[in-house]
Length: 570
Image (cartoon, rainbow, N blue to C red; front, side, top):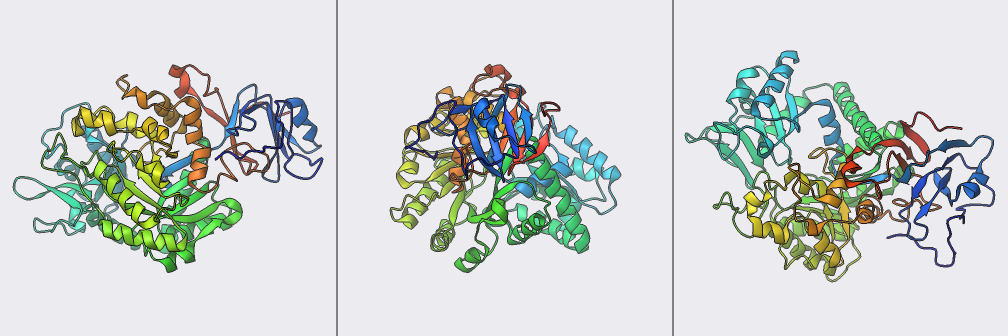
């Protein structure tokens, strides 16, 4: 929610000071098209910063009066200045890992992936695991043969990497491909039982193909984690720091100053605290506790932290999973899949278990954030929320993804005060094959229905789900305002967001989704000084040029953390 100052008369040349009279700014950015995301003063020309807070916003001539002998002044050259992007749903350490392992998102076909694994195996020590992420069989250019249910077989991977276990996570994060060495390390045989809520794909003879979906992934991940535990603590810490450093650098380069981390273990949260104490983490984190931790009132209260480490770390939410992903046909649907009539997907966590976590979260003052992609999953989660909340509409509980929602359930989000935490880029990334999965009619009525939700009064949050998709807020913005697929078609354009709504969904709306709208999300005097300079104005640049927009400067807590302007200092 945008903070309003009803007693003040704002004008472009008017200035509001957030602290005592005549303070000296440490940093001034001027000659800019400032888009504040504050309804009280939507636009300005300059911003002054002092002690990590926004000191003043207004006209150049007025803001420049805050200049002192030691003030750094940056000329934005008429470019757009806006609040730093708030990533509404992604995976921080997963992002870091993806940046230091095989990135398969741009793989054109299965042969391309096999070759990349072969190259990695040639460089790897014998026995070392080869990790990759991002493949998606629906996006390959060549038809896959042989296959089982559209997925490849492990044989090619096993041939090129006989001495190294291979674990390649699906783009959705809800499936993986393993080679023979990895399956041997996990003890997978023809007799291995399938975990509840999971799928081990098998061939006609009952042998595992190498594809493990939803809860069956844990069989391979457990083997990988055992391998990691064999490393000495120093090496494990070094690997974690490498991932964290890569993630925070990538955030700053893309203008992301706050990151909603959708599922971190207690050990990872402790690691974040150590990194912050050592001044090694330069991204604000809003953390959801991972679903495989001890989720009780005692642990929630122990780890609850609001604006810790000078506003850099908040832990007040918990993640749950109701279903899987549409790409793996794991999303829990009300009716069977159009391209797999015998399946309605997976309920990966029993709903009574989610209800128990809901009661503990409510007692501990935690926000509940439940992954729900299919229309059945969304309905069941809303049912649990409605029963747990007993009419309270101010808890800001969230449904993560909210991709496919039956028309009867769409108004329930607003009625229950539930935030639809969606990822607009999923629409444009997946839209080309969604009608094949669920049929054109279901897609039209319930897929990525952002406009329907907004019109019903629902609050939205927006993210990229990185590393499922690229951490690219500008691409996400483009997806929100165009819904244009890679083939040029528009996926039910009546559900688009306006450009201002898209900006809000990446800033102030995400701040609200994290209870941080009084501190973050707009360039308002007194708020934390997180902002970026862009090469183009996202509100006015022609649609076909939106994705060419670059982040030129990122300011976090009043400090310039990424500078690609290369000129402008005075």
